[in-house]
Amino acid sequence: MSDREIVFDTETTGFDAEGDDRVVEIGCLELVNHVPTGETYHQYINPERDMPQGAFEVHGLSEEFLSDYPVFADIAADFLAFVGDANLVAHNATFDMRFINAELGRMGQAPIGDERVVDTLAMARSKFPGAQNSLDALCRRFDVDNSSRDLHGALLDSELLAEVYLELIGGRQPGLVLAAESRVETRSVRTVEVRPPRPHAPTPEEMSAHEEFLKEKVTDARWFKPEDAR
Image 1 (tube, rainbow, N blue to C red):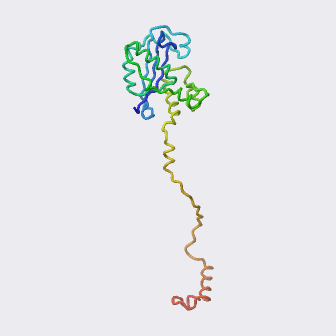
Image 2: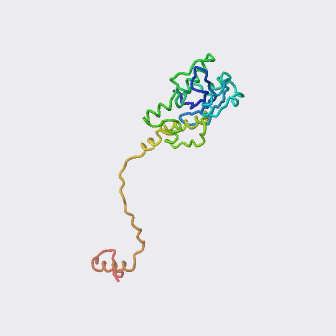
Image 3: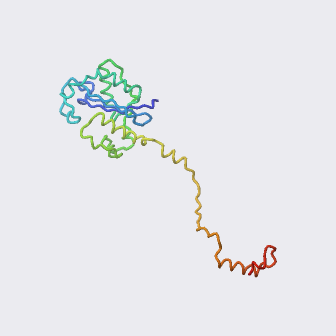
């Protein structure tokens, strides 16, 4: 299995991939070993048709704006080269892949297989059953800043989705905490009271008491001299 993944999103003219609707924007972000590399792919696409008002309200891409960009057939090679053999990560991936494969089919290209596709919507529904699992809802759940998402945009949504995806699989470095914990040995801890150090020289009072002790108790020691007991 490749350690390279492409998080991607599309914007379209509508919902009918096999009919008259077309892809108008693709945004991709590269992950290697679940870490963003900074490599991206972004392309606006001329759908060669009008833009329905409902779609325009979602992504803000007008027919006039897109008319200056290439058609899908002219960008397909660059898109496929960027993707390579990586797995594809998308939110509600069925929708995006249906459009991508429909565009490839019109060119006589083979479709991208389902075995290469990771659907973060399905992951979220499995992990949080019954909860709201839109991209915006998941951004709120994982504290991902989506404040700049006034309209849908393929590259911005891919960047947000990459953060959400990494949270869904356990964070940017899965297993790091467990690995750190496994290196910590369980051991008992004994508390030791530390007393202030004793001054090196005895006090005069201690010297006097010591001399009295020697006079009374130690009178025949070889090392004891009478003058020492004075």
